[in-house]
Length: 322
Image (cartoon, rainbow, N blue to C red; front, top):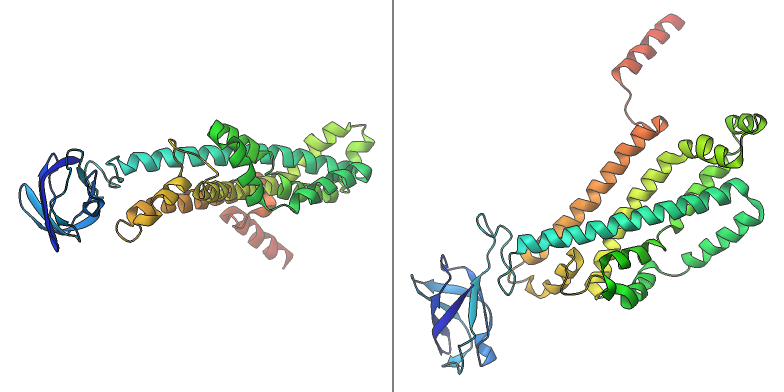
């Protein structure tokens, strides 16, 4: 970012002398601010450039009244000091995206942990004990299901968003367990009728031991997959809330707030829109892939690939049977 002097306009072209910014060439885009009148401010494409002077198309005419606070920046992205470019006031956009990714991932992890913990406990209790306990807990789940998640998130963001990212994520996590509770309940209803559970009851095992020792390990696969899906959904929820202004608030940033802040630059500097969006998609996909891998590791029944050893054993058994 540098300063301008000698700013003059003739109705079709504006010429300026530049101090403090180098490597501006024809075709680059520059952002000028702090000039009066406002017609000299904005994002412009450089048409001509020399070592010190450059020209760009503008509707500005005459000589500006005040250039004392004028600044200009070459905010293209590329290899070098600013690989993601710079924002409207010259901040390194790579640093902003990294900070936004950090905040979004923090929100995602907190929501996933709290939602997974609460959903597993509620679903396990409802599915194992059934009866009135099951009926009461499922009515609570039905009540929360009728309220749109984005509406709950908007109310929470409006009330506690200014208290910090962690507080916002905790409150959102308290409402992120509904889907998991239903899945865990269904799995527990099925597993509690299995023979190994009956054997544990006959052996005198307590309810807590049956739940945590016998049933829960067999339900861990579906829990892990559901939690990872809820985490990828959480980062999309945070993005939507920040885009609408109910999530992470200034001066802090998140990936969603970056998209909202620079959506007007899509036509002139689209990379300000691309980078946060690319990181959101990448994080969500990575979380889903991790969930699939953990499911296969913890639940052998869900493995999609048969090892070479298992294939050889199957072939040997088939030959013996023949």
